[in-house]
Image (cartoon, rainbow, N blue to C red; front, side, top):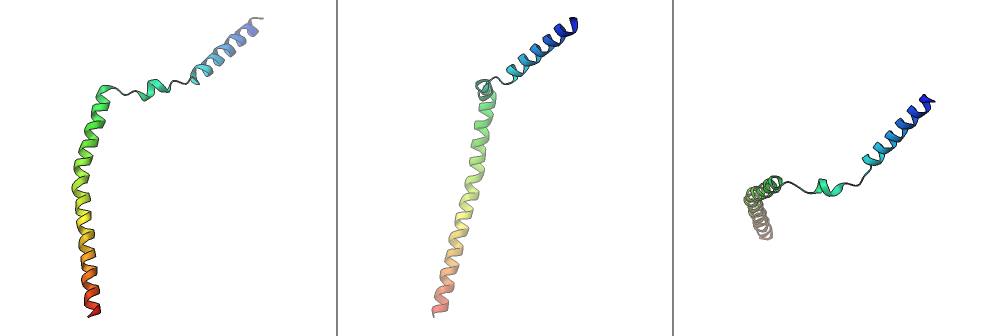
Length: 78
């Protein structure tokens, strides 16, 4: 009799743990601490500051290559 009660209490305990583990607690995970939000914001700003000159350099390179192609085409026509 004691074994049945023992096994039943363990089964109830495990069932309770599985229900607790499956709870939908996404709201607590999605909220960030103020320091994390500030860090993310600063990281985005720095990434933007770094990427902007690189993107401008790529644009200039593309324009330069287009000019070279135009010059080559005009030389081939002549």
